[in-house]
Length: 317
Image (cartoon, rainbow, N blue to C red; front, side, top):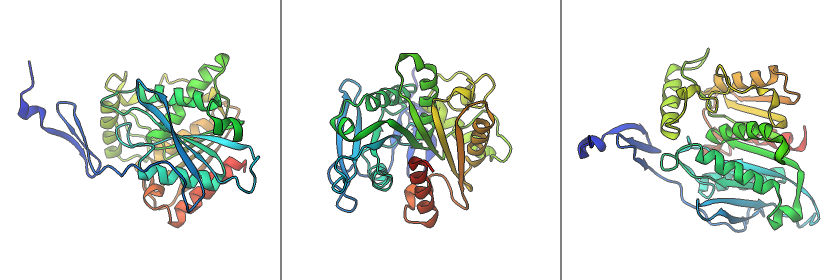
């Protein structure tokens, strides 16, 4: 039976200042950050450009090239970045992510490839995962002239925050499962406040956090088997693929220790570190900080310490 108009317009979930979900399945995105054009950043000297990878789906990336005036022949690590936003909001081109990735490219001296994947609910998962995998393979293939000329394909890194860090995990599992078909070899993975959940709270996790993340996951991936215990959302769920074949050599997991997701973040790190995976897993918790605080407060001391740790990780420390 068709839903009447009043029922369809009922708000069933609202994240203030971010989005509203209606019973009809429609999403209303609120207070979207401005979209910034690519170009030269005068403060950092980083140059950015946009590249469309698939005109049919709209998949695109924004690339960032640091200032090479002093070392024009330098070969730089390549870092593929996946933005967060519960798979529902955000863009590689908006002011939040453009500002952060621009600063990261400058500080770490990397060519950054920021992925503008399709969003749910208009494009439910696995669309974002599939777009991200296509973008990762494109970046690793050095089809772009910046990457071909200035990139060191043997030093490939993945990073993302929140849902973007969730994507990083999925990329590592895909890389592990696809070793025989020329999948990218990833040196390091940086999971910033990863968005993981489950159907049941774990020790130290506020039940409200479990409820909210599970609800958002149901909007992003309505066909998920097992709800929030889908292995893509809960890598530690019973029956989830083993972590011992993660497709990277090194990993850094971070969390804001006042974030409702902190317990999950720590549990993920500990599970990876305690598995038979042959790589090295590092941890950084930021005292007194909430979820992705470094995007809202990039100038605070903890954000600076986090950026320094990420830069050191990429450098090999």
